[in-house]
Length: 108
Image 1 (cartoon, one colour):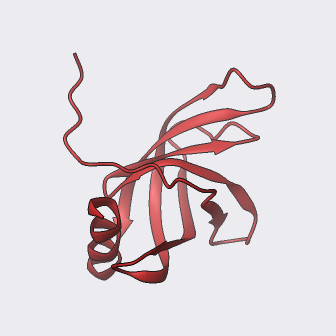
Image 2 (image 1 turned 90 degrees about the vertical axis):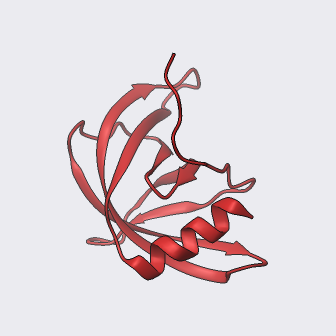
């Protein structure tokens, strides 16, 4: 049995993820932790690919914050919905300030 080590949170609404390098929409967050995220998208991500992204989180303890992070895609599989993919991504670059805000959001 695989045990999750970090708390994660489902956003409860669409949190859109944007490629920081070209401004293209990449999809939306399925769940999120400081250590990574699941991206729901219309295109498969490249496994082992490195991405720099940003998204906005809102919550009573953090207000509205733009979070920027780098992640590596660990896996990408077709979802049961046509033209939809789930991708598991591991955070590889996150500022201490952004990590603190993200941790506060996940724990709220």
